Image (cartoon, rainbow, N blue to C red; front, side, top):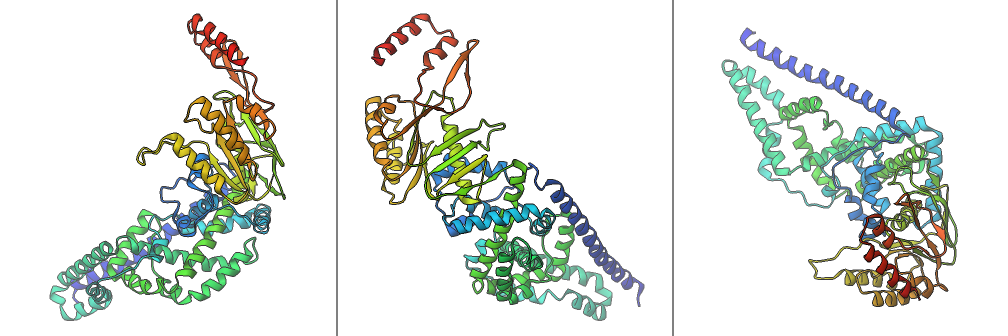
Amino acid sequence: MDENILGPIILIIFFIGFLIVNNYIQERNSKIRLWNEIDENFGENYIEKYNFSKDELYKVLGGNVDDLLYSDLLLDTFLENYNHIKSTPGMHYFYYSLRNLKKDINILEKIKDKRKRLIENIEDTKDIQFEIAKLGVFKDSILELLFEDIEIDNGMKKLTYIFSFTLVYIIVGFLLFREYFIIFIFVLLAGNYYIYKQFNKMTYGKLNGILNLQKLLILSKNLEEYNDSAFSEEIYQLEILNKDVKSLYKMLNGVNISTGNIEIDFAETYKNILFLSEGRRFIKASKYLKLYNKEILEIYKIIGSIDSEIAIASITIANDLKDANFIDSGVNGKALRNPYIENSIENDLEIYNNSILLTGSNASGKSTYLRTVGINLVLAQSFGVVFAERFNTELIDVRSAISISDSILENRSYFMTEAQVIKSILESDRKQFVLLDEIFRGTNTIDRVSVATSTLKYMVKNNIVIAATHDIELTENLKNDYLNYHFEEEIIDDDLVFDYKIKNGPVSSRNATMILKTLDYPKDIIKEAEEIASILEK
């Protein structure tokens, strides 16, 4: 054999061998690092930071937590501060669960039982989380593939298949074009690279979606090993679905997929350029997507739910969360705390067949209390856990009007926007737990007090309400319809101090003049303000 030809062949064989060995070593090291990370972090306070759309599954399935409640309770902050999710399906399901309260006690009790088993068998739980973590986070959506028509140019299909037999062409080129063998290889690889790049442009990222689908199906198959775990019911469903999509799994199996590791993916890119395997698989896979649309979506949901429930188990350990208890009527809890505030002040809640009017000055804790109650109501009915020592609740819709913004683009005032939100609450034929902050604040005092009085009286006919207000008049107007509670403050060493503890009865103090005094306002202003206040009190 001509030494001039033998050299390049040996070089190519060596290069391919190097890629295979390097790929194996990098993948092994990556798995070791991943396992160590899971072993170290499970049940500890840590945050996974991901930057991708969270609402894809919610857009498909919908939910019963509206945009205003989601915004009012700052649930995006909860996702950011308590993210133990390991995969994209997990994050999508976690978000979906926060926005879809479960109204079935049997489902919630099953979730609680699973979480108990997950915590009791932490090593097995870590093993399952490790499998899911290998799926990882990907930006190119699988769900978009299920609901989009994918068309591939016929010419590109033909070129992809023609140029995919690289090794055959190398052998043929060696036999027929020995003198020009190196040039032949260069032209061949240039053609493959051109097709590879054009195919990626044409598919606009959908190719990665197909590869992510392959990773999802591999994970679904691997999870069958855990059929005696806390997720035995889910694994059984996956086994059935895996059989349904068996032909798709076989077709995708063996494709080298993106790992997120730069060195591994660099090697895989060259491999795909040589054999155009990704393109060929994409062409075939696109035919199956519509056929197995429902099955793929169900697999996505199940894997997402497993990841989500493991994450909640980890969060439960890390933050000493308690199980919510479900009762026939009312909501009550002990030592409720706000998950967004470090060393949050704990407060109780007792509501049976009544509602609460909450008074107090600015910054005393009213809005924080509303959010604390709301967040725990959502978590109780989404995951069965709460930031509290004890929490009992009936299954109930949750609505709010805490932080409404003017809709300038729609030419609506604050009052008009709030009035429409309140109207939608009043029109519901279902019992609701309603959280209101400074109802009708966008209008004058006389109108606000009169309209708020009549509206709040009407609202408690069918709902449970906690309404925070500055309007002391409401405590008298609604004394037969609402229990009065308040937050208060005191002046210590010329400083305004809040204890953030809820107390019985309406607020008896006013802090406006006290604040002005601490700021050394002119004495004439303070004196006249106190005189006017004493007249108004009469």
